[in-house]
Length: 184
Image 1 (spheres, rainbow, N blue to C red):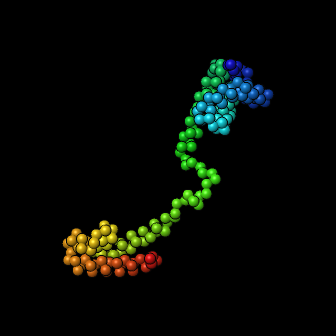
Image 2 (cartoon, rainbow, N blue to C red):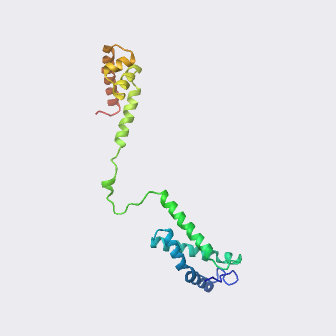
Image 3 (cartoon, rainbow, N blue to C red):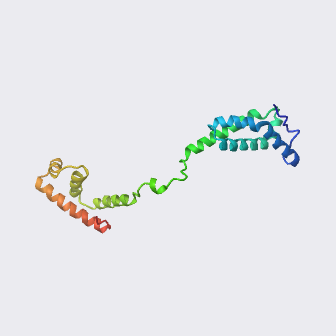
């Protein structure tokens, strides 16, 4: 089942010859290509038909060049093109997230974390305005989870001094946060 499509018989730009070429390509190659492509796309008939259509279109566009190179049949070239189109489609689908049709996005959406992020930024900025001793004390007690006594020992401070620093550090932090509009 070879095609006699050569440059001598068909030239693009000749209306009747173009129609005949399209019909001949379709008649001779569509069914075998469809069977081949169905295997490549795991039986997805719609995808397979789209790939075959694109393949035959490319075959029609290039038939004059391929025939001029002495090929008797376009089928090997068409099979290669179909395989490459299928591979390219697979890669492009893998590169983008899966589409979700008919899914209630309200139920699957993640909560908005922007408020939390803004609060963290405000707290970080407010902490930077505190004195170094106050920053160290809050770091030890709130961020490292130590008790005041453990923080005093880690920083080499008397327990009374550590308690006083925690108290005044929290007051200074609250004031800095209020200035930034964070009141909770």
